Length: 188
Image (cartoon, rainbow, N blue to C red):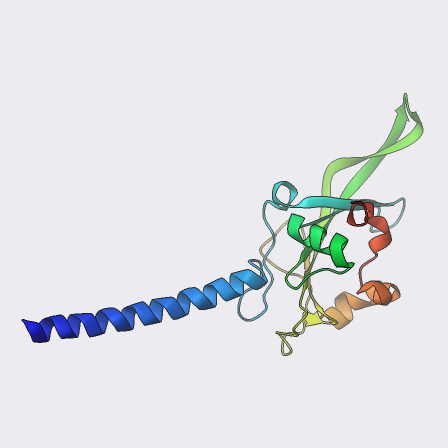
């Protein structure tokens, strides 16, 4: 009977050690970003409109990117930015592009408003440690993703250098983010 208990204790100790290692690895991964797997694949942040804070908007009047661009981040990421002027490691930025329509209202003529016509989502995840050097969607301190409304499970960007960075180079001095459109990041 004593032999059995010793084996049982040994098996239990090994099981606990393995579980602790897995929990620790999962906790460490979740600490960085719950939207990123261990290979650097970025998943679409479902529920971002309710779970994140709106930090600002852009309006593009014409062209393929026309419409409203509403940008969201985690509350803790916005608070960290207000504190030290930069996004913390693991911060998520989601830019949702919506179509627009203009009309005459009591507030004026040609007033634009967002429609239900979703165009796409851009997602950036801050990576201060350069975790995914072999993944072509990570670089310049960020992970980059683009999702279309017909399939939010597929990141259609394939290489951030070809698909993403060119639009962000003018904002290099502000960590590739056009922060001037996000007044809530500077308001205390």
